[in-house]
Length: 384
Image (tube, rainbow, N blue to C red; front, top):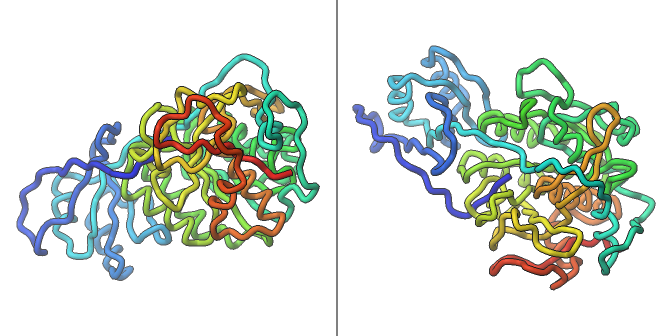
């Protein structure tokens, strides 16, 4: 996954008669694999619904996704002429070229199960995981990912498939990543918050790939609909995915946190500054870097001031579709440790506001070797 503080965009040159002081900016995430002819259109905050409908009505292909909660807007395939018309629409705020997004995990073959014990002990190489028996009961975790195998015995009937934005007609996890992540959050064996409820929002395909327009559709859905689930103790959201920094994804992330939800996101596996990737670059997001069982900063993990906390990420065992388990590595595995801890702490009565700060303040300080300059040396702990 990825994150960033500065989003560098390349303006697309275009010449057209303007019906506004200047055309709406058309931005391309620098360094991203963009999707030719596909765009995300953000309308101005004050734009009426009729203005959105009017904009969509002029598009021959129609809108592939509509956004109402993250921001007012839509995604669509546009001809050059349609793009030019929209840049001159006085109700358009900006237009961003769609780009690909992927999971942030690496499959490994060795056997391992150390992450849980590490977050409840101040010393490494222990095998005990201590936790309060409430274990996140009454909380919910939304997993924006490849889906969840909700029938896996790890979830004990606590997992539910909510929405599929991929359009593959398969309301399950065909890749495995979302199931693995969910097991770390709330699995009966591998989970941090073993009694939390899990909700799948599928935005990535059977290859663990997707694009920003679909990711935003899933984020918009969570921001709008999370409150409709019975989560009396609070709700967390995990995003073990990401791409090059983009304003549209960042605004969708802010909508989630502004809805009163705790959002944990993977820092990314590029060994680069997390400030250059979304959604991890958003200050309101709890951005997670990865460590290994030797208490060493993972070489692949993104770093920098955008990272809020570190968590186990290398050789993590968790659930896999088909009643199986698998070992995986990546900041994709670190983030759900923090999302799960968020649910665990909410179950103990902590408040959503400032939850990432609470997690950071209770972390083990200075324990990790090889932490890059300007990156926090804070290893997550559950306080048990």
